[in-house]
Length: 313
Image 1 (cartoon, rainbow, N blue to C red):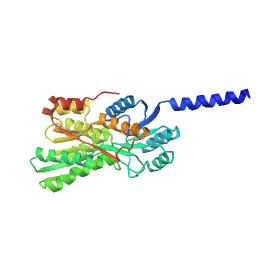
Image 2: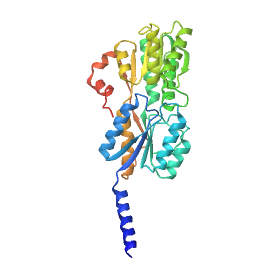
Image 3: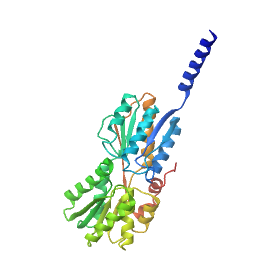
Image 4: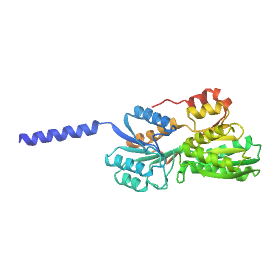
């Protein structure tokens, strides 16, 4: 009889412990080495504190390490976390993992870069097609509507960057017929490779007037190549995202403009949607965040300063 009572007490204590533990939300970026995801992490932590949930931050070392991201997502499902926020490195690679999460009733928010699967709660991201259009309009303005340009692409299968690149090409084709896109090269999301492909493009196209780099790694590599060739400021460079180095290059005239997202808010919103779902609410299927075109004179504006220097994790 006593042993039964002890077992009952233990079960009651275990149940109470499980009920009282803080919910756990795993946040999985494309890469832990990308500077873009530092403010995403900070935003996720801020939302975690606001909603009293623990944030488990884990991601692959590079944005093209698809298998490692799959392993991390699957391990979080095996741990039975209460929610998953994922920036998908590739649009189809996580389909089976998302099916498993759905089978385990683990809500998933996709952020930054989308998936083809519909097995998710909410998609939180910049309107990347429009952001690419904004970059094209700025390029058209910088070149006076004529000249040759090149695109330094991110990685095939990356929804977010492909949307930017397609938005850029759409506007150039429709609105700036005097501008010709003469080269497009993928960088694999790697700064060093982005520098190499930019140098190759510059070697073949000596009269290049402009260049669009569709992500933070491609923008860093393109800027390094232009500086190494003595072409900083001569080739109009429009980059994407903002880091300390990119902001300094904007000040120095290496970039003519940066198209900037709000990664802090992105991380915050991704966690908020999951926390609200766990509280019984249903967030919208899609939450679009706006990008902003930033030029050197804009850096003095308080709102731009706040956007460019968010809290750190």
